[in-house]
Length: 266
Image (cartoon, rainbow, N blue to C red; front, top):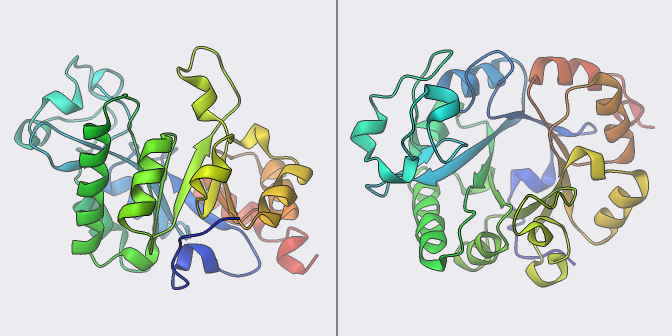
């Protein structure tokens, strides 16, 4: 059974009869992903909150960025972990925007926003994972955001460490279909759920069937699905009883969910 989350967590109590709508890296279909503009736009579009990615830069600060390097979004070869915060402040992203810190993102989203913080750690060195978990915990504490945060990761080590560092703040395990070129791909599946016992599961969209969702819910897990934009699929997931849906287009998702069977009591 799932365990370890605070009864005060707004992530686990939900927002009503519909699933939570979380902007994937903000409103990333319309704004540069993981920027303050993307997070603010997601909230203005009616999202319950946002999903964002975090890692540590060379000077130890927690910054919000998905990739381990700047190539895709800035056309530069440097790695995030190799640059100090001062250097990252000078990076201008394609499409507009800058790289924020986690503290800045929490503030920009506003006090009503739920924030799913995904810890990006693919390495095998436990010290790096622990340092990132501790830094995220410190940022959440400084922002007094414990009641509106859920921490997730593909890394079982990150989930395990978070659960022991902040058992009052819920955590979720991310997993996906087993692609052999994702190494180590067995750890990107749900096999460790009975050991980790997170409060939530975060499956890839394609893994969600009515039977799977019922099984996860019976085990006590909140079920937050990624990444879903197609209106028919949004409605189907709502009918299955998922807890939250992570989407690139919060406004469209909110509209598509407005008259699902679940939203009218079905």
